[in-house]
Image (cartoon, rainbow, N blue to C red; front, side, top):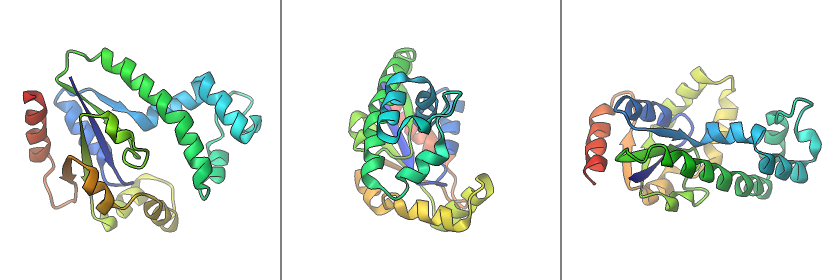
Length: 195
């Protein structure tokens, strides 16, 4: 079974691409959703975050205060790296366990916002980078999230540039409104199933 990492900048449409693969019967592991779940349920992560940020990082119900966490790590690269070093290995362990449930599949997808930034892309057989023009990405996120234009632009600027990601990716899917993604996805699906 092949493991394929799927990534792309905010608003690039990686989730949409993964939905098409799902329709084709491909199992998809959403790493960012799993990380959020584990931050509230996994004691190793909870204890680690409390030791870094203090126990008040969790509320009385044991739920992570995401706004507080974001305020700590937004402009602090070293704190962000510490959080990533704590969370990502545990998420990957979850992925390995999840993958065993799908061993009959020719391949599985691992969707994550930061795959190249963490070096985690090296753990996969192949990677897919989903790209879209900055204006389209901005418009998509403005429609989807309750964020200001300035906040979205800051997030886009804080991510690794697409030019660097292109150098690391095995395959690219262009996801602009004037381009058809389904033929490209079908091509990759056939390629992965034939391996």
